[in-house]
Length: 500
Image (tube, rainbow, N blue to C red; front, side):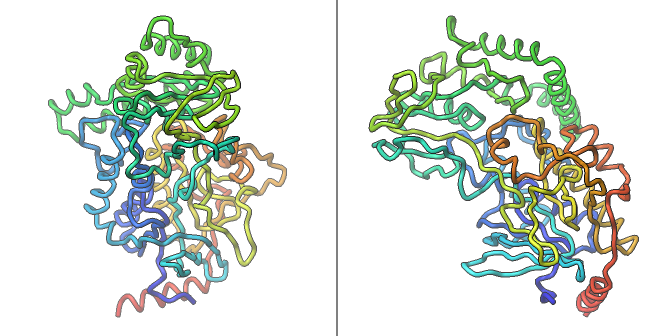
């Protein structure tokens, strides 16, 4: 049996926004539960510590990306990466969560024992494997591979005499002042990078195969600032939070119900922000419907301003090959560059890439069904946080936390040591985890868990999740509960040791 000092009631993997939020809920609502956080890197903050490229910021407003239990109090509605990293660090310090983090523990394997009703977690630490065990495993390791981003095979890349950079591995001292820069991609990263680099670069070009829908919004909220002057800031925060939640859901549902009108509106709004005669249809009219991929936020019109003043340009074409001087396009045009930035996306990863086994048998997570979008058919006592594609990540992370602490209390009350979502319909047809057409999702469909009818799906609907995760029945006929004699004996021993 695992040494008691390496055993925890709840083990959280990942010390980013989700992990710190999960830890808060455990210690607030289940104070008798022991817990620890394993973090693979040497700092907390997750995404907001990993990415260091110029202009890194949220593409969701902080009224909804911030925690429900700790209001975001800065004036910026769209916050930069360092501010968000500081917010996560401050939250961890304020609640003593930082003292529970074990850094440089990269989880590689997780193994469930039905006999003991516990997970054994193997992590690499200082070049050697170490093991922990827990009754409940809470994976807050994100949805993408931290070690590398996605870069297609570009023909001739080795010939290019300049510098090639992926935003996920941004060099600390990259000098782009006075340089010609080409950014490959038109997603959130590219849209953030281009206006941030435009003032220093000689010129910066966004090279895209296909356009992306853009929308503009103020970086700060005049309404939030006005409300905070006439009422307590906590009240203003909650009013703004609900205003943004309702607005996000309204926009998404309207876009899905009326895609042509939504597309027309977005394109006309973009046209109004660009110079007269700009070919909006070529460069900003996608070949898909709005919200089949995430919309790209342009705070304070910064991207459009860079284009208007001539510091940035957009090219829509396909790459033929890299050359010594830059990129040769299918059209025959050559884009000369000193620096090429491959803002070409992420590699999705389930459970942080950890190998999974149950009672000695390897589990292919890609063949499981997702229960409510955060548990897996046949896997006991494990939750993997996956946020919204159509709204802020933290909104769902907070709701998942509320569900988990309810589940833990329910198990304790009834003497259960395990909770397993069980698919009792062998004829259930697997559906993709998300009906989005983004490249990073399409590339990962084979190894992502599948969906089916409720509760075997992620609803992408905050109101429905509030009703289900906050108030829904836990013993719903799909979740199977069990008790393990070995686990009960181990728990008794742990309590005796703790009392000594």
